[in-house]
Image 1 (cartoon, rainbow, N blue to C red):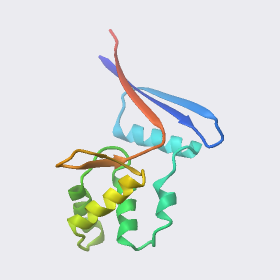
Image 2 (image 1 turned 60 degrees about the vertical axis):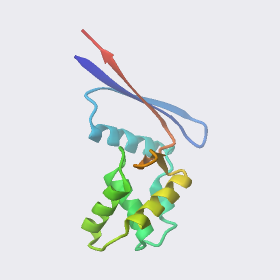
Image 3 (image 1 turned 90 degrees about the horizontal axis):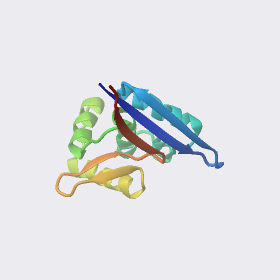
Image 4 (image 1 turned 120 degrees about the vertical axis):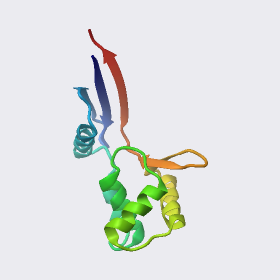
Length: 137
């Protein structure tokens, strides 16, 4: 049986360093909780802080909130965001608009962007997260 291990190294603005290691059954929920802990330690610049610079009812702000809540960990596409946005807010948003917003967030360093034809995005955190699997007898 293999055991998964997630290690998070965190440095805060004051130069303090923390290392958090989780070993065992790693689930999406546990990784989210681990990232919440990292945010509490103060090293992750939360997208919420950036979100406050946008009008609360703006489409850009709504897209950013949607990403934070629905995709704190993991990859997503502009079509994913478009579909969920329209379901939650009951209003249409163009795919080109979503793509533009995601590209801007990637340029600002808030999202990782991958792929050329089929672009995928995920939230970028200032922490280094390494995952390894160990095999035990």
